[in-house]
Length: 345
Ligand SMILES: [Ca+2]
Ligand SMILES: [Ca+2]
Picture (tube, rainbow, N blue to C red):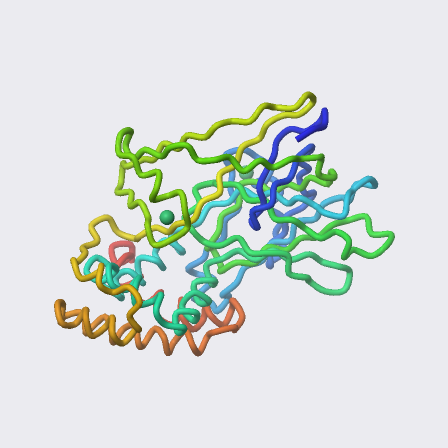
C-alpha cells in the first residue's frame, strides 16, 4: 500500500483489504430503550452490554444500537466501519445446548459427514444465523442491510464492515448505522469509522513454502489445497506457516493478512470410528445406515436430527426475531436454565 498517512491495512468481513487513515468515533451509541452508551464505548476497559436473559424473558428478542457519526465533507463513497466486540455466554451456551442435544462427543464424527450429504442442512445453517450481528445503514428513508458479522467466539476480535455511503442523499451531514443482534448476545468494546478513500494497494498472494504442525510434522501437502484433506489441531497444537516475501517497492508499506478455510469442533474429546473413511460419496440415508450398524445408540441422535431439520425448516428465511423466539427461547433457553444455570437460581 502507498500513502503517507496510512496507519494500517484491514481486511473486511468479505475478505477485501482496505487502508485505514483515521478512526473516528461515533458521537452517540443509543440502544432501543433510548440510553446512550457512548461513554462505555469510547472508554478503554468499559463495555456496552445488555441484560439478555431478562430481555428475552420479557419478549424482547432483539436489541439494537444506533451509532451516529458526523459525515466529513471529504468522505469517500465507502465508510469503513470497524467494531470490536465479544460474544457473551448467551451465544456460547447456545452452542453448548446444540452439542448436548446431539450428544456431540459421540456423534460429531459421523454428523459432520451426514450434514454435508443433505440439503436439509441449509435450514440449520440459516438458523445459526440467529447468533450473528447485522449491520444496517439509514439512507434517510429506511434501514438498508450492509452485512453480518457471523458468530464464532470472537474474543475482542475486530471486524471491518464496508458501508455504502453512496446510498445517502445530498445534503446529509450524519451517518447512522444500526447494529442488531439477539438481546445480550454481543458486547461492544469499540466502534469507529474511517471515511478516507482506499489508497493504492497491490495484493500479492504468497506461495506457501512449508507448513509444520507442532514444529516438526510436515503437513504442507494437506493445507496447500481446499479439498477433503485437513489438519486437525487439538488443544495446544499449532501450525507454523512459511512464505517467501516479495521485494517491497519504493514508497510502499507492507501489510499482511492470512486467507484460510476450516472449521472447529465443539468439545475436546470427540470420539471417532474407522468407518468414517468409508462414508465418502454416500447419501445421507446410506451414511445413517452405516453408522447405525456400528453404533446403534446413535439412533437417538438421528431422531434429534430429524426434529432439528423440521424445526429449522419452519424458521428458514424468517427474521432474526422469529428464529430467536422459536429456537432460542422456545428450546435452548429452557435447557440452559435447567442444565447450566441451576446453581444461580
Ligand atoms: Ca470501550
Ligand atoms: Ca486441504
